[in-house]
Image: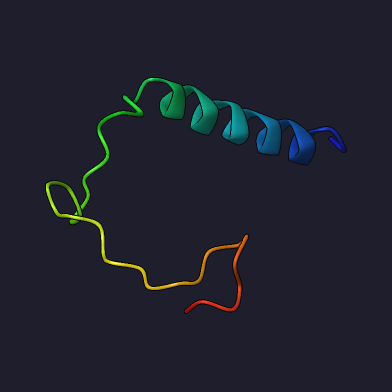
Length: 51
C-alpha cells in the first residue's frame, strides 16, 4: 500500500510526458510573427564612450 502514492505520481507524470511528446513543438501560436524587431539604441561593447 505504501507504494501506491509514488506509483500514482509516476503514472501521472508518464501520462503527461506521453501527451507532451505527441504535440508538434513547431506549432506555437505567437503574436509577434511577421512583425519587425524593435530598434535598439545601445552603445557598442568595444566603444562604450559613444552612445
